[in-house]
Structures are given as C-alpha cells and as structure tokens.
Image (cartoon, rainbow, N blue to C red; front, side, top):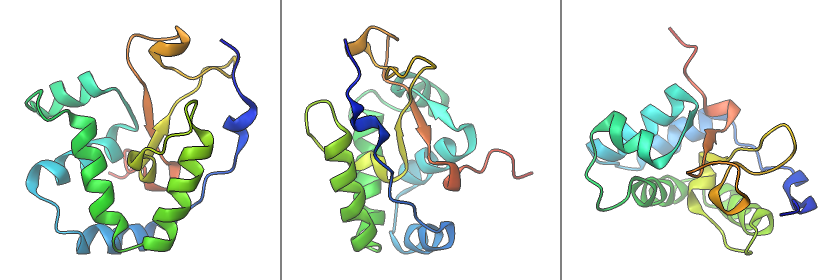
Length: 139
C-alpha cells in the first residue's frame, strides 16, 4: 500500500504547561489518569501492551478510554483540540478524526509506512506520545 503524502502535515503543537493545566481541570477518573500517565512515561505503545501493563478490562477498549480522556482534556483547550481534530482527519487514511491524537499518534517506520495492520507492517496499531508530553526521562 502506498503511503499518502498527507503524513507530512505539521501537527498542531501545544505548550506542555497548557496541557498540564487542562489535564488538572479535566476531572479524569483513576483509570483515565493511569492511562495518560503510562503513555506519557513509556512513549510508545499498542492497545494490548497498554491493557496488559495497566491490567485493564478488555471492555471498554483502552483506546476508547484514551479518547474519552482526550475529550475531557480538550474541553479545557478547545481551540487547540479543534486544530488537532482537523489535523487528525486530514492525516487519516479514511478522513476520520481520532481524538487520541491530542496526546499521541500512529507511528511510522523508516520507509515512511504507518505501523498499522492495514499496511501490513505490524500486528497492532502502534502509537507514540507527542514529544512535548513525554515524561519518561524525568527522574
């Protein structure tokens, strides 16, 4: 499958302090906080690794919980969240936005192909937290 040129679109960036403020105001539950904290610490993940690491139930799916968390956070940074949604839709193979793009996005291999089952590059969708939100090196 050929990779569309859309993957070169610049992602809207958010100041980490604005994100932290929105996160603090978003009233996330313990599971949602665990998901966000885990993603920000490990940097890269799949739904199965996220589910296993946090010992989450399979229903609802961890990525659905992530999206719900992003919507709660996005309520406190609405202009940025809308820009991310537009970017997400334009960057999607199918023109569909993914609210999880507020915090993380699909990863790509060195050949410029997405690491997703649809392209035949991996068994599960692979995601990486946005660089400015990564906390794994903070000791």
